[in-house]
Length: 412
Image 1 (tube, rainbow, N blue to C red):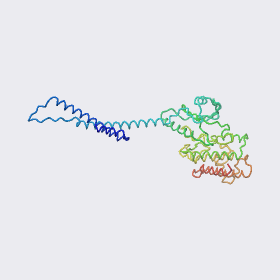
Image 2 (image 1 turned 120 degrees about the horizontal axis):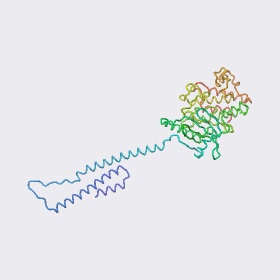
Image 3 (image 1 turned 180 degrees about the vertical axis):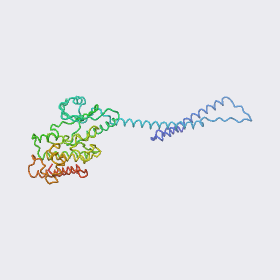
Image 4 (image 1 turned 90 degrees about the vertical axis):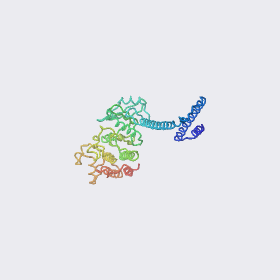
């Protein structure tokens, strides 16, 4: 009884689980010992009341073994088995909890809508996705259109194909959603912010802010048609904004993000001609998308096999160099002139040949040649563009270096 009281006092004072297990074992043993002692006392009293045992001078007095001595190993074994069973159960329960937490944290397969800030109500968005008010463009992989939500907000919606419903593609779809969530967190003045995306069927809807001015490709077409005048300062500002967007993707994002599909149609311009890069990193998400459609802006190391295996940040720089050439010359890379100019049918190669011949001024857009200072800036920009179009990726500058190069041409 004294041992039991002592064990109870130690139980109340101890906070360690292992110590409490030992105290519990001691308490069980003491309780069992007390019970056996009482039982033995009652047995002795009963025998004494029944009278003396018959005695014999030839046979020894029988020795009665207390049950306590035989029960101790059994009690210890039972306690040990209980402790082992408890530990195994605790481990299994911990594994179950861990698996459940992982399941909760696991990104679900593309299902929609998944909404990002600012909030767009799911029902409103679903209705808008089926209301193609104004088709802005299309390609073999999807279409791009403008629509208006019930709250009056004008949005741009891009519908992309490239998913299948087979079970083998579920992991790929989950990876795509993780990438979309990463892209939705990008925030920079020269990037188009992804407001929401909705996965449904074999495609996905991407929701962006609507930019009324259109893309750089649209604006340059209007410039060639003399519908819009775009001076050198505005064009240089566009180039600086594009390279700052790439600098953010290449150096400030963690992990770093490559654009994969940089071209004038993916450079949106606001009312002040501030550029915003669209479709950052999307081309690699969908297996049906390839690089063939961007061959005029694709770097030599990736052009042959039209794959992303050799794509790097310097491949984005080559594409930027082509955009800078378009801004400087005002020409469309698909112009038939380049197929007849003996330059291999490339706007970039044509400019490189003029640069080597010291005739870079001949390539400049005549509509923007003004003061001598601006013309000198444009010639320096031609040299920067030629370096960006180097055949070897290692010879091209980084986006971080290009920001300094271009901002030094003019005060921004």
